[in-house]
Amino acid sequence: MSTVTYVVTDAVATITLDDGKVNVLSPTMQQNIHAALDQAEQADDVKAVVLAGNNRVLSAGFDLAIFGSGDAAAGFAMLRGGIELMDRILRFPVPVVVAATGPAVAGGSFLLCSGDHRIGSEKTRCQANEVAIGMTVPQSCIEILRMRLTNSAFQRAVGLAATFTGEEARAGGWLDEVVAPEDVLSRAQEVAAGFAATLHTQHHLASKLKARAAGLAAIQAGIDGLAAEFGG
Image 1 (cartoon, rainbow, N blue to C red):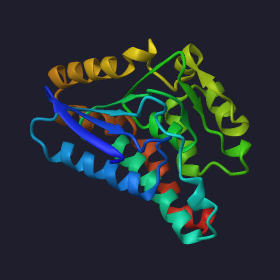
Image 2: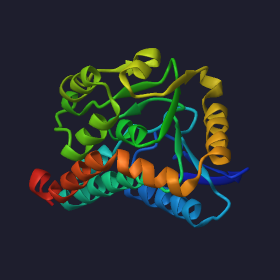
Image 3: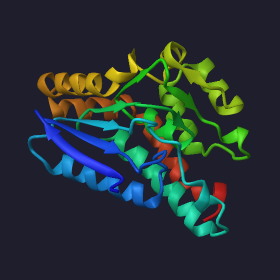
C-alpha cells in the first residue's frame, strides 16, 4: 500500500501517513512525505496542511532495521534525511497542523514537534525514547524539542526518555490541544481550515521564521555537524 496519501479539501491539504504498520520514517516514507509537501507547496489553492498518522500511530520513528543492518551509510542517510524533513516542516510556507492519531515516539516525536499546531488525545503517547534503547539523541532533534517543550519536560524527555500522554503532554508542550481520539483528525482539519481562512501566508511565514530564527540556526548547525556527531 502507499505510505502517504494526499487530499485537498477547502484549501487544506491532508497528508496521511500509513504504511499499514507503525509509519516508520524510512527513506521511502520520507520521500513520499516530501512529494506530498511539494504538491502542497506548488498548489496555489492550498493555504494549510494537516499531517496525520493512521488509526494506530502518528509514527514510531526511524526504521530500526536500517540502523541495525550494518550499513552505516544507509543509517546515517536516513537519519539526516529525516531531520532535514523536520526542518522543512518547521520552515513550511503555510501552517502545518499535526494530527497525532496515535503515539509519536522517537523520530515520530520530533516530527510531531515540527508542526505549527499539534492535536492529540488522552491516548496520545509522546516519547523521545533514544536513551532507553541505547541511542544518543541527535543535537538537531534536541534543538527541535527545545523549541517546543517546557524546560522541565525538555529535560525529562531528552535525558530520561520520559513518556507524556494526554493533558500532561499538552502541559509539557508536546501538544496544543487534546480531544477525543475519534475527533483528532477532524479537529486538525477544522483548525487548519481556520488558519487557511484567516492567516496571510506571506506574513505567517515571515513571522514564524523570525520567531524560530535561533532554533532553526541551531537545528541547521546540528545537521551540518551530524557527520562528526555520528559518522557518515
